[in-house]
Image (cartoon, rainbow, N blue to C red; front, side, top):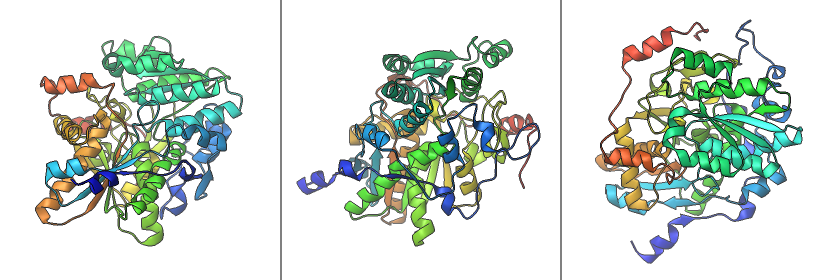
Length: 459
């Protein structure tokens, strides 16, 4: 690699180039998402049904159809602590793979808490503060969302309560300490503090927990206190809306590099990570007739996009949310205890589900061993240890780069390196010790989980 290559490796933007608006893909979708339903009446719900949980401005964003939503100046000011985030050309990874593909990655690990999650935590805390809320509850899987919301709440003087999935609470103690440092209270979920938690513990005292369970606990807590609201780090429309600053920046950066990706890839848990990078590029497909492939990368241990069923289901385990049209494995599904805690969620966001149903995006699944192999290869080639969630996107990027080599074609690949793994050394320790094994759900396991549902199917 010559000096010119080294100088071109990092593609930056100026602070004034932070996007001024969020992009709302709903405005451009050929088929709009189906409405959420009241689980008792099976009738579409209105915004008033969400008022006990969310501030009104976020509810308006949840149902918005305008193409752009303005970002408040105070939010952009806090974004400027770490945004715009850098985009890199992965010369080291290209060399390691001996591929003709050009590989780029958008690095969100430079945020204060090490992932893309503050992109939505900051505006959510801002809108809650504007409406006089005193406290926000939430759940967290890997701890990245809980860390981000804790940071955002500290910026606006709000209390923060986090229900952290038990498996991650035990495996990622420093994520808990980070949340405590920003002033949050953190509980290992399921807890004895809520009816939902007590019910789950009575049924299975040894449970390692799940995002669905933690969501139930956080929602119950918020719904019982008028001074408290709930915040979600993925899945919902307004969350994905906020994350689109990633892709908007990436488009400007790719233009500066004189490139535009043929393939855009991001890890997939509930949808915010993928939506953040991919939705602005899908806009180019809708508006300009571009043909950019957008691929969501998920674990084979929790394959809702690649093997789930498109139907109405609850967003939480106990059934406190409205019914959402989603690709799901069933809200009672308890995922395997993989280290990528942020991807252990039974369902996919409504918008992403509709896009997949309409074949406007793709999905790939990778097993535990494959993703850690990809993460280690990336770390040695690029010098950044990726979070376990991020390794899924890397695995898909590597697979596509190898395909380019096999076919003798050069394509430009862009993926979202959504966070660093500096707090995830336990996961890498287990990998090097041979404790991480390949795991893929059987057809029988998936069918058994879906068979427990009595929610409406979708034609």
